[in-house]
Length: 236
Image: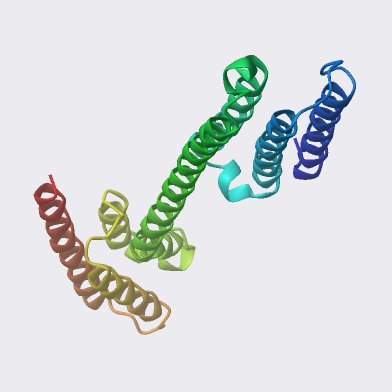
């Protein structure tokens, strides 16, 4: 569903729930005169509904959180549970709290606080996931860029005489763990690949020099892969 349609649907649902709440309270709630407790309960129910509505709308328009299924489901479940629990306590435990408004308010605030803590925790978890994903993408970029360059070179008909070296270099890159533990080393390898690319475009390129370039880069990649493997083993 498109974002605009999803947003309209959520707003419509929110307005329907709000209308039902107000009609139920002012028309069908009770024939007796409404007390301070009733209006206090209504305020907390409306607060829970506002929290639910806000959460649904934010999830509809914020693609970052919509992509995180765990956070989306967690937020909806938490806010829906908060709304339902607030409403049930108001309707089902009225007799218990009628003569103790302070206890009712305290209970509602505790529930509100728990819901807020869960939502904040989910938000922090989502931020950490997004940051981690972004960091991993950045750490992959350098070697992946080098692989893309070599792939382009080896498929260029002008460089077919050097296909043997380019194939070997490409396979070494392709089989390497792209997530860097030493970004500086990955940058250096990427720079060497760029130099190799520029060298190949020179009409006076010599096969022996090409072989030396390729061997140098392959050695750097193998050394880098060994360091990466050792680093990741040490992390466990």
